[in-house]
Length: 369
Image 1 (cartoon, rainbow, N blue to C red):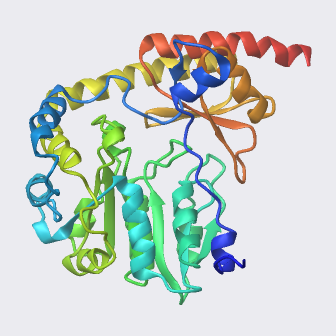
Image 2: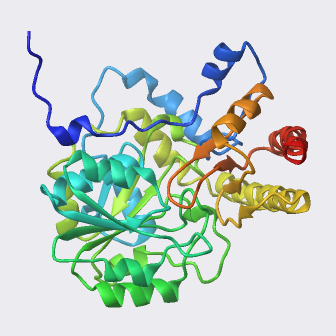
């Protein structure tokens, strides 16, 4: 019997491969005490206030969640100084990226982004049979904003800018963003993906919500998966003009964020002490990790996030397996200019030491190769 006809662009879609879970590596290798440094999670865990909020919400699991996420959206609007109609929730910021593609792109429409940026942009564009227009990164693996601006054409509907950038860990300044927005104007919606903004300790780093409030054609994406430690609950949000949010809401699934996720996020945003401690830990351990990589002579891209892009000396697929055998999971990275690169999340101090010890075991193999 002939099966259902699948459009060619769906047949060609690549499947997103997440960082390997600890349980899978334990099953495959028969090991325990695995260190996962692959998915840029908060190694300190979630806020205790978020955990308490989840426990308090458990008795209501038989009820559907608030489909609009009113309480959380109201809190986020107050936090950022915007109207509640300017806030939308998603199952992580990734779902909002996919909603943006569905809402703004038709067959053949274009989205512009850097070659060395978040893979979900490409996946979302391909899902709607759009055309990805990608530009090479700078020599320092940053966004080439002038080149990206020049790439905007008549069919460009979205521009994705990851600031800071995943997987490179780089960022661009307020001055650079201002120049870019002045050149692009309102020809396309500029999507500022700020999933890692909480970790940045640079005075010239821009808060793109200011651009939304200034009336620029910008949407800002943020997530509770990183510094807030709620990756397992899948909750993120976007901020833009009322018109943009109303458009995206037309393609949003009903009840797209769970009651537990909403409760945890609402509690987490008020736990300033937990966020401050997570930031301080990350800054300290990022400095330690990068300092050790430099001392060992292992090339890396200086990062302002909670991960480091390391340029390894050999096939990353093989090294990925070798690290696993030593109880450490890292994230292989591919694509233009990223051959044999791996992304290493900042863990606890003990986890970072485990990674460095595994690295020491593998580095001598380079000399003998």
